[in-house]
Length: 105
Length: 119
Image 1 (tube, one colour):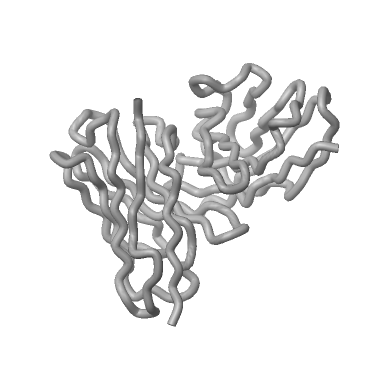
Image 2: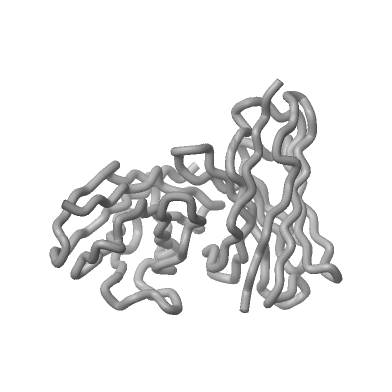
């Protein structure tokens, strides 16, 4: 299994920039995708194939990385961005990271 | 407009077989490159991929659960199905179905269906 490691939680102030990391236990090429999940809701696709913005997603969200290290950046953070963010690789079957809970100060 | 909706039994007993249905609209599983996947999430925990089925009836399973999973589809009725045999309390979760395309990301998700395994 390709294990994806995310930091468990982050707290930032509105207007700041935040970077959420995801490290893969082996290379996944650029087949890394990012989702946002708010409490009681289904996940929502934000970024696909490392750096491509999904339809309807604000340009405040961006993705970067390749190989084993990937980053989701939100700049600037807004109050509505309070959520858990999951990375997912699809190079070797599918696995998800454990999620990073983003809280606003 | 792409929509998906899951349905299931709600509650079942250990050792039973869980049968889930995903009814979708806005795309067809007969279209080249289209697929549907199943993902689950225990309450308060992370996401676990279970299985995918593709337009050409190719099927892929999570290796750790492969022996217990069967995915299938009914293209004419825009439905996909997942069966999990011999359930136990560890299978208690919200089950999602989602559309998947050639780059293998899940771009549209259903609202999820809660399944509880309890005696």
